Image (cartoon, rainbow, N blue to C red; front, side, top):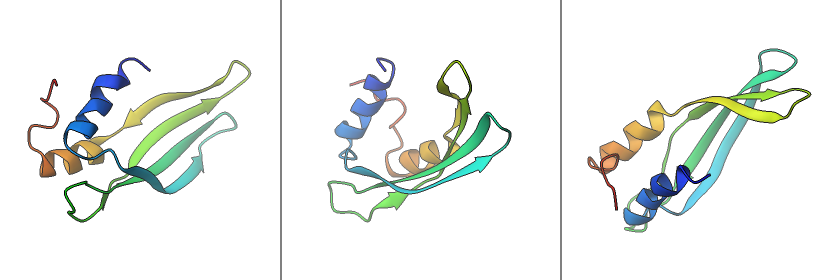
Amino acid sequence: MAPMVPWMARFDHYGLSDNRLAESALVPVSDTFCLCHLTPEISPKDGTAPFRFLNIYGLRQDDRRQRFDFAISDNEIAALVARHPDFSAYRG
């Protein structure tokens, strides 16, 4: 969880902390693995229109535990950088 703190601090800095899960879908791949399609919606505090993007996570559930094996966040990065070009470079 600690590695996520600096990333999420960027959302606060840019007034993007009002997030909600707008859509979700699970796509089974096998008995122990599925693709999670999660679409968050962000409502900027500056009053501009809310925006959405699709992230895809690989979710594995077996006898050991449930865990995300990977995340594809290309759409998230593109949406954030389109609005705030220095979003990824911000270090607080």
